[in-house]
Length: 466
Image (cartoon, rainbow, N blue to C red):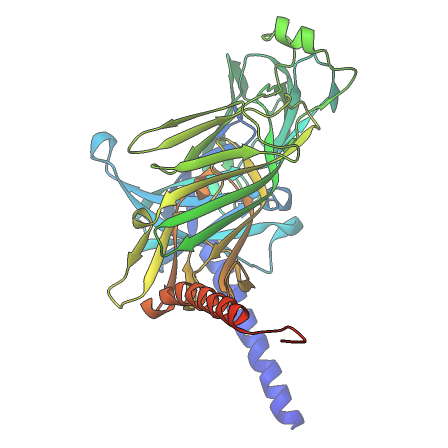
């Protein structure tokens, strides 16, 4: 028995060593000829565009490219996408690539990795161009942390002047775009230039792998930091012709906290100077052909909203009861109905499926915790969800009016959701049409029993003496 355990331990150690050597050899046989990074700080969601020209200097074909991130950024990564490009200018074509998180044992200082799987192996001596887009949330920190109603909002952003990479980079340049020309300070790593709203770091020549030079940019950003701490969306399917959607929001402004006393007079008299980083309305992009729309909070219905609909989209402009400054929060509910035929379909294998949009309908918002509950009709079986990214899934049971066995609820949960996650997802299930007669038969039975009880009561003599 001890010999078997020892053999298994030796085999596991050998596999681990093999993976370690493969990762090391893969990193050493690739070089980055040119790297260009553009960081967009105009919103509270940081957008980073990375263009890499990769060359295979080894002897074996390479099928993967590693992306390295410091641990402080991994916790705020909301999305990582990659494309392989071929051709130039108008003839350029893009091929989506698969990006997956990867664990490597030799990452210095807690570096985290993502693996880009190439569509075709990169042979020795060949080059390929890969474009990467990754989005960061909660990466802009207000400084000062508290401001008065008449002050502008200043934030700072931390990153590196050089791109963190497991490969040797021959030439690299980083561009940082700010919302305005007001930049309080920025770290100088020569050569560094500034022109208008753009900072340029580089070009830097021949830097070894894992080179890192920290920088801090302190600048003005008056965009509202709208963050939904928790969103619970319930989508209830009725085979009688409608879909009911109810969304519960807990919204907060995560920018610089408001200090002092709020003056409504000053806020309305000087809208361009007073509370420039606050917001008093939000835009919700809803599906087309919505009806029965309502918007209310704990007090009751809020009438300060405007709905614009057409055949392709619906836009609901909502206005809370009070403007939201930094540190202020609001809770409210949005509900609406949709025609069933626009979102429920039948697959070739006979199953039915709901095709609906994931994510938050509010524009330019970050959702810390998003929960989507799809309530299936009573009698539905074998539910399954298809989502184009990783989410947590489980099943629940909900009881509504006239339910006997309860309705199956497919629950999807995701953290750190942003507008790029507003993509379609599907929920498949099987349903027998005979179950649609359950509620009408139950109602008919109750009415019939009530009628028979009335007839019996009228014909029975309950008196003591005749």
